[in-house]
Length: 393
Image (cartoon, rainbow, N blue to C red):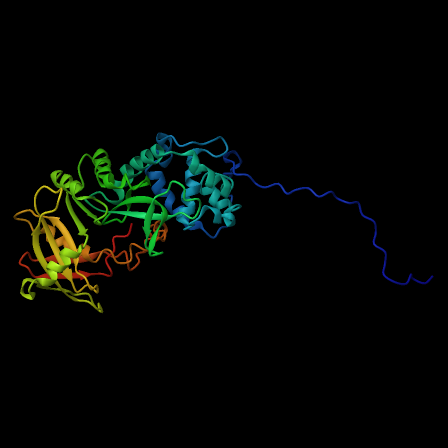
């Protein structure tokens, strides 16, 4: 018998109906902690943060703050899942699909898998300012003895967050990267100078509330530690002149950059060269090492008393930079910290990158290195900067 010619006939098969694939849902009850279980991940470094969380009893801080949660995703797991995204340098919650089924990230948060982007986005609308304030107070109070036990110096600054949606109800703020004003959400930060830890933040600000935010931080720190900060660094727009007087009455030293008006620039340009002093910034390979400065006493509207003003030239800018500090007799510490601040603005205004992940890994970029300096209180300045000194907020 000859075999049949042509292509062999396909055997009939029973058709299997198509059914949708069941997606794994984040659920704390489905987490397996069986002995010997192993997980493979490319982001295992986030677990290095767990000893600090256990030391400060993070779950108690979340419970005391009153954050919302559920049986499937408790409040602590919700915050840990968001914290993991920050540690992994995820700038947008809409770009987290590559972690949807990473069981190791879910284990970090106490879940079987991390929540999806819809939950991460929706959770922020279920919280209020009081939740963040209570958690921030508890967190800073717990980590301060560990990370910055002798904290007394802070850098303050405002940062506009651009908004690309419907701009209804938003103020116009200057956006450094765009070079113009645009609709944005104004945020305020206070950063401890030595440890570079952000100790205070508020993103629920309007232009009307901007003036009193520095004093709000002082009240926050006093309620937390029982004392006022010793030193504050901030820009001219951060604190108006009447509030400078209140800071001085509280015994707080401050260094701020003054706005350069046309009349001030004309007066400085008319002064003879003999009134300006010479100074040297002995940083290797620095283009502008020799500067000139003018030390004088000024009075400002709304400020009770006199202020010390340093006009500095030779920093690579055409116009001089004006720096203000309190005028107190018998002390030179104010001058010692003033010229340090003159170099602390470069690279900060336009830098909007995340800073939490590099700090946890112990990395320090060129814009984070702090200056080493000294002053002999006789008028001769010597500054040794370990890089471009930037107070990054």
